[in-house]
Amino acid sequence: MSGQIFRCEHRVTYALCTLGNHVYYARYLDILEAARGDFFRHLGQPFLKWQELDTVFPVVECHLRYQAAARYDDVLTVELWLTEVERIRLNFASRIVNQEGRVLVEAETLHVCTSLTDKPKRLPEELLGVLHPFVHGAAKSPKASGR
Amino acid sequence: MSGQIFRCEHRVTYALCTLGNHVYYARYLDILEAARGDFFRHLGQPFLKWQELDTVFPVVECHLRYQAAARYDDVLTVELWLTEVERIRLNFASRIVNQEGRVLVEAETLHVCTSLTDKPKRLPEELLGVLHPFVHGAAKSPKASGR
Amino acid sequence: MSGQIFRCEHRVTYALCTLGNHVYYARYLDILEAARGDFFRHLGQPFLKWQELDTVFPVVECHLRYQAAARYDDVLTVELWLTEVERIRLNFASRIVNQEGRVLVEAETLHVCTSLTDKPKRLPEELLGVLHPFVHGAAKSPKASGR
Amino acid sequence: MSGQIFRCEHRVTYALCTLGNHVYYARYLDILEAARGDFFRHLGQPFLKWQELDTVFPVVECHLRYQAAARYDDVLTVELWLTEVERIRLNFASRIVNQEGRVLVEAETLHVCTSLTDKPKRLPEELLGVLHPFVHGAAKSPKASGR
Image 1 (tube, rainbow over the protein chains, first blue to last red):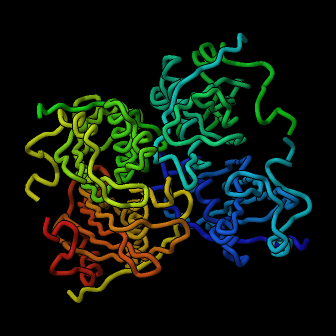
Image 2: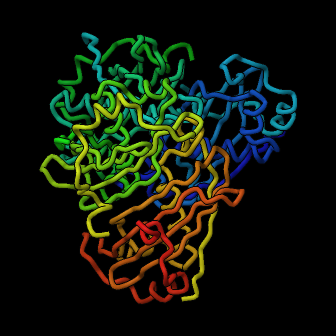
Image 3: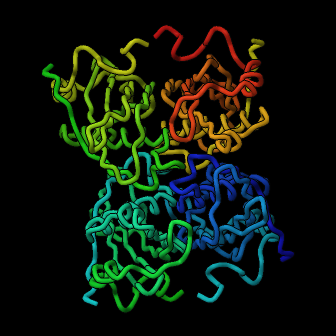
């Protein structure tokens, strides 16, 4: 419960941008997926390993708040932590910050743990252990902040 | 306040899908953007016209609930309506339904009205008039449904 | 052998565009995939049906020539025909034209016919019959034009 | 003329993949754009700097040969070099190789040098100097290899 935050970087390419020189609103979800992938790899078992063990983590909800635009060639830092990890649920909170320290996007993605055939299953014990340091008690997330 | 719903269709291509034969979670936002574009065109003034009048509608929040997967070659119907239209705010609710009538995704995208230089501006009177029939009083949307 | 051309339309969304108000160079391949899907559906059997019969058509080469930019809200017409259909090969040529009749992109995508496990297989007889009217003898394609 | 090759890595995310667990054919162009961006940054001036000097490098042709599929979570190495750098032309060749050393894609992207208003302009002297070590005399590229 020590409230650690995982951080990784993402360079903005033309592929992510749209008119008006900003990242297209859907592409932040691509960036967040890459960050979650890095995070699980950092924890020791990439998603691919869990998948081979018949364990996947499909997204059931997304919440995004856009505060400022990411621009071409920006180096974004994705900050990632967890707001809930229990039984079959796994909730990520994240902030996307640019190279000047400005928060561009706040997001929350809610996941469930299932088999490859969509059967809900409990989060593996091994995973609970390594996720624990990244769980933040009071979810300071878009979902929680006054909506 | 008559609660009309705008509907348009979207065929699922390989480009929208990922592993496991389902649409990638971010691509539903691409589909919703296309639907909003069709809706404004249907109302008489495509986004491009408004843009030429220095009026754009950037997204400030998105909320998505995934209930079932869209598959390759599915014909999706996007149902679109408004939950709020006032001063500078424009909130869309939508449902993505497959050819069997199953609701796959419920979404809400919250927009503001601004100039091309990001200055907030009031929604044009002309637009208010044509949007009015699509405003639903009680937002039956992901935001409202018990969160 | 009569040199028919299949045509379908594609509206340019923000999702397809990048900086400088033009379609991102890779997204034309998304548009061409959608067009080939429409074409096969028009012929009577969508790709999905062939896939269920253990027959897929992976791309082995692409060639694209960009002549002018597609812009947001353009209505593109994709013109599609075949330059070769034999044994295990299926070569598409295409042109993407905007609403003013200007050719924006010329492309060729070369495909093979395989099983779902990547084993080459002969093009189905039934398919050869319906494709035949769209085969153009002299490939007027990027590949052929002086490269 | 020493034939240097620039190399950078790209991790395959779900966002890049489609059905059948392979990278969608268009997304390799996204990967190549990121690699060219890294290359120019490595040379000292990112594309953004050139853009600020009214100098851009739009793609006029792409050629791709797909030899094997990239899979989710693969670490791809993009190898990049030049086959032609003269006056207003800049031709890149590249190979995308997976972590087992297998060549998945061979590609060539042909660019011109223009102002932001699409006026052709000569490649800057400063750029010619830093590009020179990466120019390979005999283009071993899809274009050259027997087509």
